[in-house]
Length: 273
Ligand code: HPA
Image (cartoon, rainbow, N blue to C red; front, side):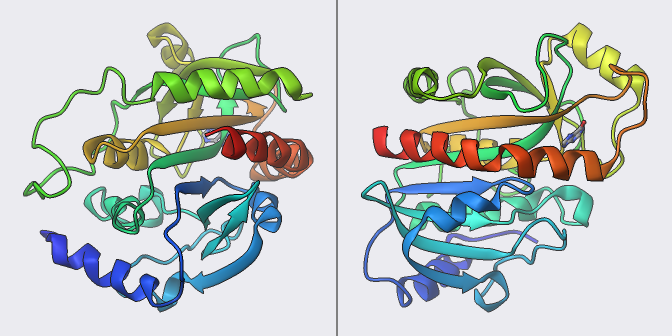
């Protein structure tokens, strides 16, 4: 499918009929990080299923709703539930949400994810501000005809995780009980967790965390020039770091445990942006 500017406009036009303000910041919530959504005041909720040309969440820990409202006095739009290539979506389809939010007028994006720690100094419950990523698997979401209205065919990625927003997130960490690092996220397509050998390779390549999301959205945001902050919540040590199998339950439980403190940290960041 070759997308046109009008394709995304259709979704944005529909959403504009539901709200009477332009959101300033777009936020994507990772697995089980939904509790932040409860902090949104005067929420207006739209099911993904009702938005023309949008996608549907198929993962149980992703709610599948767009929530508009106010956090710390700032107008936000929050995706409670995101889309992954492992659900069967093509990489090209994964541009849809961020482009629609861009058309709604957001001026910055915050992406969050649950991730496994490759870095042995990290532990579950830590947060990592993403300073760079490694994506050696899968296509680019920007493959196919370029939509020039969003951005150029070829574009720089050396500052895609906006340095000023990274610094802001590190500064906000000073008032937070969370341990916050800065590091490199490596994308794996999933849905299986990585093998211990893949994690050893990721460590050799310089990865600090691994996960199955975020990078497609980050690339879409970078392409259309949106300032970008991305945060990993460490839910587990990656495969083979500890001598025991990984489970989705371990990831969900850890994410639920940290969700409250993480939500407070996010509120501080939104207020400071
Ligand atoms: N690997 C990939 N994705 C993840 C992990 C992991 O260890 N933990 C949470 N999401």
